[in-house]
Length: 260
Image (cartoon, rainbow, N blue to C red):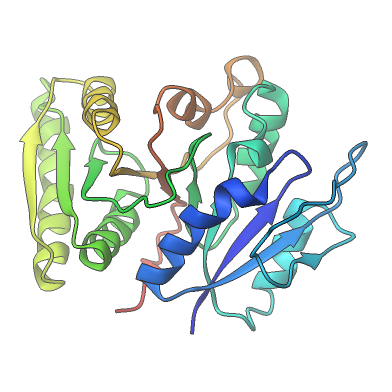
């Protein structure tokens, strides 16, 4: 049986995030592995009434602890579930450091909202396709979640004014359509605006209109000098996604895909 990792920060109330995580684990048939990790200057408080079971404790930081689970991957880790407190979105430097480290993660990671719904069950999944690196891998995971939760999958793409760019986009769309059809995943496609920003913004708007939605996005692959000043785009997305969970998939170009 595959497993999901649940890192718990000193600022987390595990009783608030555990119900949603159990809901995810139930549908995906994943075993939950909760763990604490070492974080400078902070101590963990005793939490009562927790049904998390055995919470593992590590003397390493978050990234080294996750690495120890993945190499070797004895627990068959398939997903990491992250609370906003683990990322610390209020600090651009700390959030940028988080995403910089997580770019090497070999499994997808799901970022929960500040107030995850206890009975969260995505009925609508939004996947913007904008010629961003890693969209082919991300499409496989979007299909997996759609099939697992019996959710409607919505592909949103811009109609680029540049003819050549639009041709590249259509090739990517053809690949994704073929992949989803082979996996027996139903979907619909809508053209939203003429830029990547417009298509992503539309996906955000639609997802925020319902509590039972999920956004799937490829994570940014490379660090950029501008991130020192403004942070990676993941930060802006998470600050504006309302109460919608977001599944990030790192580009790897080896088409690592979920089983089933």
